[in-house]
Length: 424
Image 1 (cartoon, rainbow, N blue to C red):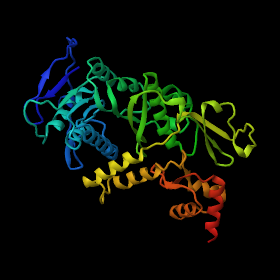
Image 2 (cartoon, one colour):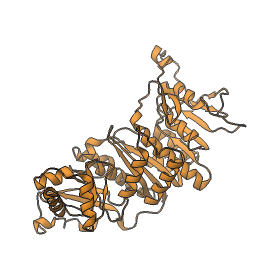
Image 3 (cartoon, rainbow, N blue to C red):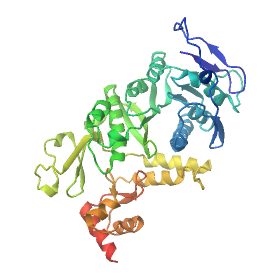
């Protein structure tokens, strides 16, 4: 492992000190591409950086926006924030935590040593500092190892960001160990195939949930991720609370910000099973105590092949409305919610706040499914939402699917309303 640090955030020389682990006595010579990585300069929220040869997605900027807002709110609340960026890539997340969230310290880690020069240049450019305070360090080691070493040194962090690939869940426990109580854990999954129910045994191995195909599979992906994180936290005697849950179609990417505290979730509340009936289109949630009695009203309480069950998953709220309101207010103060054609952050946060209505159940209803069952053209989304409100139902748009609604209205009533709208 190589550890690189800076005394300040100025352009002063970096300190390079060797790892205590033995080095390879016969190292392979670096290739030309390794010795001189290519430069590819980009700009994000006014910060210019080099993405180099790292895996970088411009579309992930919204997820980085959300992380920075959360880190800034944490610092405003607690007075300081220390961030561990376990898979930092080119270092843009770490840079934004330092500059925008004004993090007191950032540990930027990436297992690929070839990214070292790029990360160092990004973190050192344009950043001012004073005195001998060290505000950031770059390391190159396995993410689980760096978090475990932090735990063994009792070097705990306020926010840990693990931007992993696929359905890798092995980082959960080591992240909890390195996280302070009441700290934030920004966790990731990019496995849309598994959340779609196409590999139920894989989801069972990774997150402890047997997931089957459902029409709101991308929300299931978020609930699967939270459920797996909850299970690992409970093993260590912790409880977690989702502050926000974000889905983006590119990748796809599932990102959830969790707050960790002591104590287990009482009586498995918000951790259970969900069902979807392919016959009538209704969904239900079931507790562990109801296993063996799962059925749909349309089948007269009998076992039916039309009922698809997934779980155990997180069946509680995906967001904390008051927390999202604070994020939105901060984003407005920073000028991040104007005519931003790149991320539409303000619109996203407002949709998440609407989704937080406690009357709204899990899942969402695609208007195309309503139209298919009603054998009509799909009704306009705003018109459908207005009609549902007039009949006393809670309803909001879904940030996950553009032509879908979250509502406590049964599918049969949605079909009736859609037919009535068609006749108007």
